[in-house]
Structure formats: structure tokens, C-alpha cells
Amino acid sequence: MEMPKYILQIFKHSLTIVWSWGFNNPVAIPNGLRFKVQGYLHKGWVEVVYDEGYDTFTVRILKRDGSIKQEVNDVYLDGLVEVIDGMVERCPNYEQRVRQTYGILSVAALGKEKRKMIIK
Image 1 (cartoon, one colour):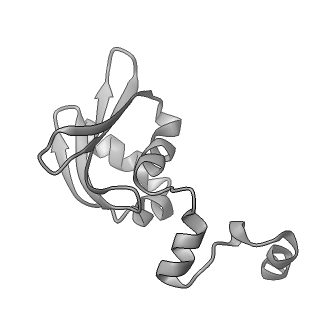
Image 2 (cartoon, helix red, strand yellow):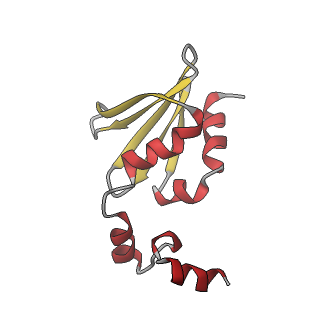
Image 3 (cartoon, helix red, strand yellow):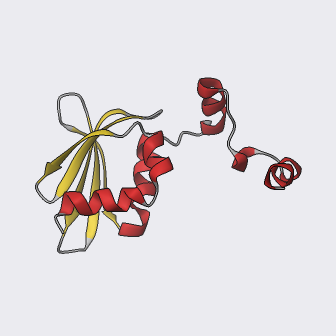
């Protein structure tokens, strides 16, 4: 499988998180994928590049001029979405920002008793 398609397959297992980034405009690059996001922490381009030698990924947040703003190396397959989420979307006051922006609250942020009421 081509690497850009493989990365998209990884993302499909966590679509809700990927959608929360405002993921769009995916572009195949050598051994990876570049895409745009509109997250709380970063708005712009992200690159994910596979390193065959180490069997890991490198995630890069790019500035507007295309230079690297932030880079995380040696990201394993099972941590790829979580690492990108931490670089693009997850801020310290994430739940509060979601409430302010969308007027909603995630079930995870509710207290134990309220979660029980929803799950019933």
C-alpha cells in the first residue's frame, strides 16, 4: 500500500479526533502525507513522513512559509493520532474551549453521576 493511503487508513480508525482538527486538503508527499488543519493550537499545514529505517513516523507542524515550526520524531503507529492531536488540537483548557465554541460538552467531561444518566 502506498504510504499516503496507509496514513489515511490509520486516521480512519480515529475519525472523530481527525475531524476535530478540521482535517482537509490531503496531499501525497514522498513517503508521507501533508494536510491542512484548523485546530485550537495550530491552523495550517501538517506533514506526516514515514521513516522506513526505524519503522516510525515524523510529524511536522509547518509555518506559513513552509518552514518547520515543530517536529516530533520516532512516533509509532499506535501513537500517531494522539501525537498529532497534542500538536494541533488538545490545549490545556480543551473542554472549556469546546463548550464556548460549540455549546456542547463531551461525555468524558461530565461527572460520574451525569454519565450514568446518559448511558442508561
